[in-house]
Image 1 (tube, one colour):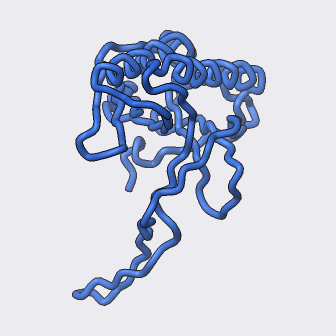
Image 2 (tube, one colour; image 1 turned 120 degrees about the horizontal axis):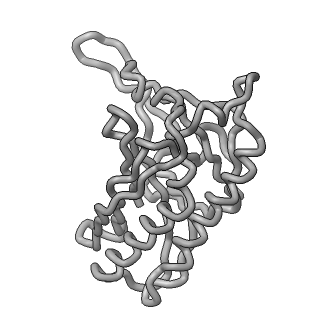
Length: 211
């Protein structure tokens, strides 16, 4: 599921969550589930985002095949939590825990739309805010899982790993090498066990229009 947001002049803010289902997902059921995900975001997440940070599109893509269902819900869910927004490049990291241990980047979401008052004088997220927000995030995920269409149930929140390590690719003209992620033959799917919030605000350089 892809959640497309806008914040101020930035019209390309997105985060992605993966969910596995056990049954069959028709096109109609995919549309129903996408709408449920958007509704859950509007109920649990949007009220904590600043005014001007809005969910504008929810896209569900079934990855079982190239011809499987894809559904879109273009109903907006608008932030309404004040106008003292942080710069658009600032995001809150929501970390997801899995049972498998490995080096490198672990599953996480970079969520924009936080208020200046959510940050303490020590440049950390306010713990009162984060303790309440992680409860809202868990409710958001729980609603998506609960509202899986009956024919596709049960559903599980997962992470999908498509790459394993790197390999070097040499430019034939410059002779310079660069590390490129190596695509797995078969993606690895891990069940998400829990969520937590990184206490330090994160920076999204692309949202700051930096390279």
